[in-house]
Amino acid sequence: MAEAADQAQHEFWRPPAQGAASIVAPVTASASDRSSTCRCGTEYLVSSLYCHACGARRSGPQASRTLEIPGLSELKPLAERLGLTIPAVVAFLAGIVCVAGALLVGIVFTARTALDWQAIQMWRIEWLLAAIAAFVGGCLLKK
Image 1 (cartoon, rainbow, N blue to C red):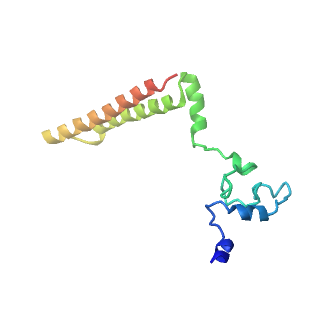
Image 2: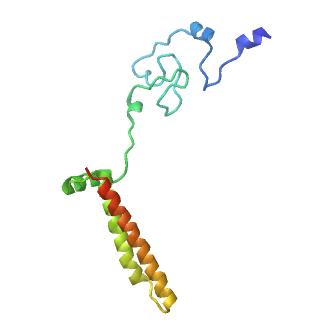
Image 3: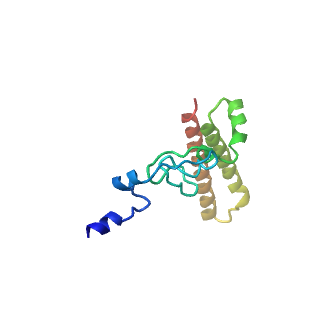
């Protein structure tokens, strides 16, 4: 039974046993190969930023990935022109869309009865409340 425990291989999310670490020789790789193997000798999983064996951060061009939001580059000049932060500009634009929605409710829907008129007014109120919330959020997110 003891022989089976010595021969058991570790699963990929668990670190290897201490005895196995001394057996493994350090891997020497070329500069192009270093991005695919960790300093502990383990190969990185596909598109991983960390080693699954030792937890070390991956070095190389794969490690320098950043979150890029589409359209963010167009918001930066507008934010600089208005003297606001980007979240404040987003909230301001959301408020503008909500005000436009409140105006369009009256154009798109027509009131034939008093009940229709009340429903349209409720929709306008909801759009205007959303616009107020967006503008207040923009004021709170200012510099």
